[in-house]
Image (cartoon, rainbow, N blue to C red):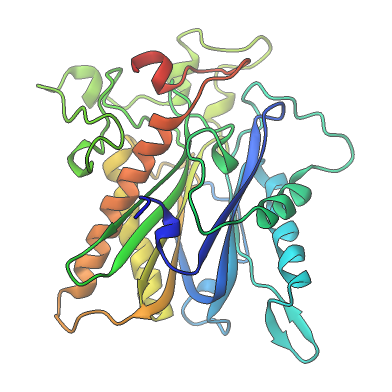
Length: 346
């Protein structure tokens, strides 16, 4: 296993990134239509086609999912992925027409030091096409890549993370997440990650938990606090990154267990516990936190009564690990507002 969401059979991942823009897009393509749902628990989400993922809606499966920077402009990326899939003959059949189903979620990276003067039309439709064209079922970059290219957390760069796990029954679960949270992934100003109890091997440094908690670890610290420490750009108001829509952690939890649409919805809800275990604070009124859940339908769940409970618990753990990996792998670039974890602690 690669410790990536591509460990789930039938899933392909592609990125498009622009270092000057300090933004990017990540496309997840399904080799066949897969059951999907979602759960939004932040107060300022930005999404496309998520209503159809409710268990009571008609369409059962999706052809792909998109995570993108760019705030509302980034929703155009789903159109690019949809256009690429349509060219491949994919989509929900309506008479002679195929309509690819590609829900999307975005994060806010418009004020991060990148050049957003793109003129009449945003670049995100083209980035979506490029990400779809580059999609592969093999290894892919995490950290400062794709939707995580311009992501920020409170005082550190954010990034794109992924992780996977397999249980004793051979059922796999994996996460993909773009971390642009209002809060922190680290315990105060230390190098230790909140997700440390779930770490496997040394996937985000192997540092474990600190020997004791300090007051700064227990107090919420946000981007608003970080900006007030002087890490601001000329002309940028210190509270701009703390406004509604200025933050968001968006993710995908995927499994090869066969799930109904209702079960996928519950899995997305349970996976949000991974946000709470890896980010402090999370699910705030100023975050747009949301998770897609995806099932390739290849393996039946065990008959045990607690089988789905265990799957949901593992979903939260793998999501927490993916969040820490995304921040841990981020790389600094010229013009960044905040340093990367590697520059500060590595």
